Length: 261
Ligand SMILES: C[S@@+](CC[C@H](N)C(=O)[O-])C[C@H]1O[C@@H](n2cnc3c(N)ncnc32)[C@H](O)[C@@H]1O
Image 1 (cartoon, rainbow, N blue to C red):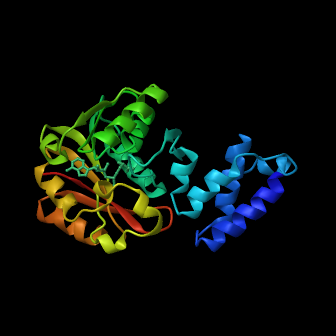
Image 2: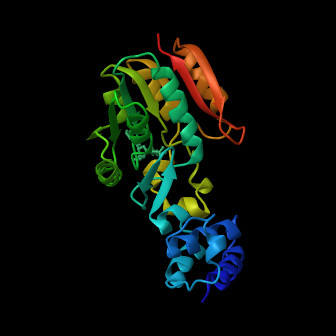
C-alpha cells in the first residue's frame, strides 16, 4: 500500500481504538517505516509502505508510541525506549532545564538523578553539562540495563548504580534531581500507562522522603499534576529556601525546587 493509503488506514483504526491523536500517531508510524520524519512524509505519499500491520496492532492495543517505535526524543538526545522503563515525557525536559539552571556557576557539579529509568534526565544533563559528574540510580535492574544501553549508544559517561534513592542522596551532592513515582492510585493507571512498569508509576510521599534524606545544595523534583503546592510546602517545612515552582510547556505546575538548609 502507498504511504497515503497507510496513513488513512492507520488513522481510522487508531481513532477507533481510542488513541487521542490518531493522525499524529499514524504519521509517526508511517514515517518510521519509510525511514523519514513526519515533516518528510509529504514528499513520500506515493511510496510503498511495508510492515505497517504489526506496529499498528501494537498501537491499537494502546502500547505507547515510544515503545512501538523503539526510540524517542528527549532534549537533544534520541533514547532507546521499551517496557523496561518509563517513556521520557516532555514535562521532564523542564526538570532538566531547572537542574541545569541550579548547577550553573558550579564547577564540575556533582549531580544525582534518583530513579534514572531510561537514563533520560542523567544523560541529558551530562550531554548539556559535559563537565558535570552525573550519577543515576534506580531500584529496577531492568531500567538500569536500558539506561546503560542508552549511555553506551550515546557515548555519555554517567555512573549508574542499583540502589535506593534515599540512601544515595545522603552522600552529598550539588544537585539532586528526581522524577519519582507519583501516581497515587492503581485506578489511575489506564490505557498507555498500563504498559509502563508499576515501579516507575506508583508512589506516594516519595518527594518528601527523598528531600528528608538528601544532603545536597539543591533539590529539584518533577511532581504530578496538582501536587506542586503540597511538595513546595513540604520543602518549606524541611527548612528549604528559594522554593520555586515551574510550569511545564502546557502551563501546568510540574517542577518544584529548593535550596536545602
Ligand atoms: C517516574 S520514573 C522516572 C524515570 C526517568 N527518570 C524519567 O524521568 O523518564 C521513576 C523511576 O524511579 C525508580 N524508582 C522507584 N523507587 C525507587 C527508589 N526507592 N529508589 C530509586 N529508584 C526508584 C523506578 O524504577 C523508575 O525507573
